[in-house]
Length: 262
Image 1 (cartoon, rainbow, N blue to C red):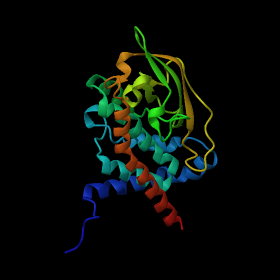
Image 2 (image 1 turned 30 degrees about the vertical axis):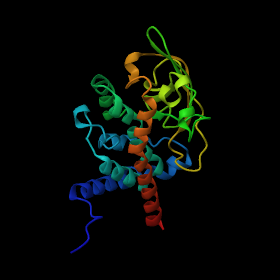
Image 3 (image 1 turned 90 degrees about the horizontal axis):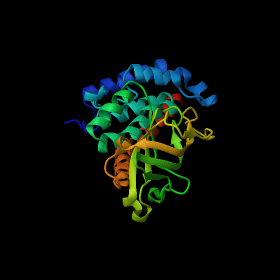
Image 4 (image 1 turned 90 degrees about the vertical axis):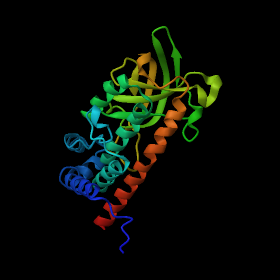
């Protein structure tokens, strides 16, 4: 009996083949220039969006493909094989929107997920200068107001910042409660008071902008809050549990691309 433990079901193999074909034709030819010129891989973004691969994880009822975790990592792996920077498009879109999928209400999902499915990017704002590996030490604050919330602070090392239209922001709502005083919010690029730092100079993924995101008295209504007040940290951690595997897929795809080239 053959050991088919590592043999993918045919629909996944078909997906891999189709993404590989698209990546070879529409992403790989621009990969060198994207990295060399530190420019956003617009060609890849357009091709992935057209093929509904830029955010395939979005459930079908919101206009997405409803792809499961395995399908998403196969997409990311095959794109990374052709262009590392481009593989961050589907990876970051999943990372940024998963808090909404895991903790958002129906109204919120109907408001933002179809927009993501149509091609608007979604980034994830968790890390800060003093809160990288110890995410609970974050200082970005959301203060309750009569109309909603007032957001102040900054987030560091945010992938696709400035390109994405939407941002999940993890902020401190009650510093006295530590990790239980943290809440998740959705901020839009068009909200007054949001701005972006200069792109970081990096050794790799140079076509994917990594920038600081600043919040200067950003006023948002309470319908931007994801989940309960104080539940932001657990939503953030659940999101990372689901999305760490996408980073492994990138590494695998990059290694495969290097091996193929060699």
